[in-house]
Length: 243
Image 1 (cartoon, rainbow, N blue to C red):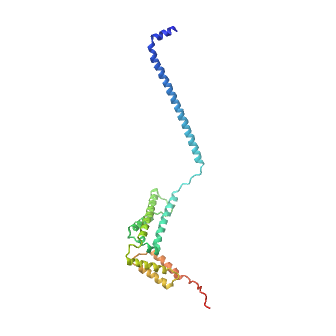
Image 2: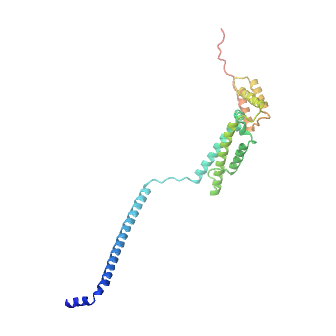
Image 3: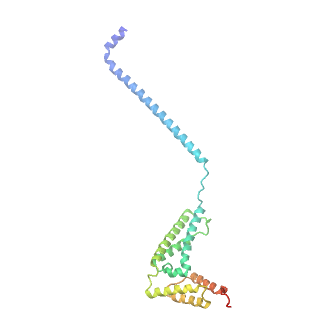
């Protein structure tokens, strides 16, 4: 032991480097312990996330499958929208009374009506033969866009026609339109005689001549209505016989 103390006394200056080495080793051990602890926490967290994902996947698998829309179903909806707009347009195109009330809807000289008719032509041209038709994604998208344009153009034209009404006509022309509306009521009135209905129908055509161009379909519908009223069986006489 005495020799040890003599050694330390002779080499006391070695104490400080040895303390530094010991201190560095201690810090290294401490840092290594921290890294191991951090790694264990990461592993525990990863295992927890994996377990949660497995539970969520199992719950999702237990749910009934959600039906996905088929391309034909989407195409059928687009075609239905196309038909709906066309049906709304035909209400103006085939009804003479509506044509008189909102003449701009049948006047291709009106810019918004002309734009609608162009959009209709494009949508009609791109319309497939059926909802089961085989179309590429680009063709389907092009048709859907065309139908959307068709819908928007019709809405804009309809609002403008309802705003304008007969304002684009002169006062004498508006008077002729009013007369035509009154005569139209007589032409389809079963209470009027056959001669009265026929005369009213002819007068309607005369009053509208040069003001509004009726479509062939509108003329056919009107003539059928007039003919039905003319050919209708006479109503029974309910007046009691005089005593």
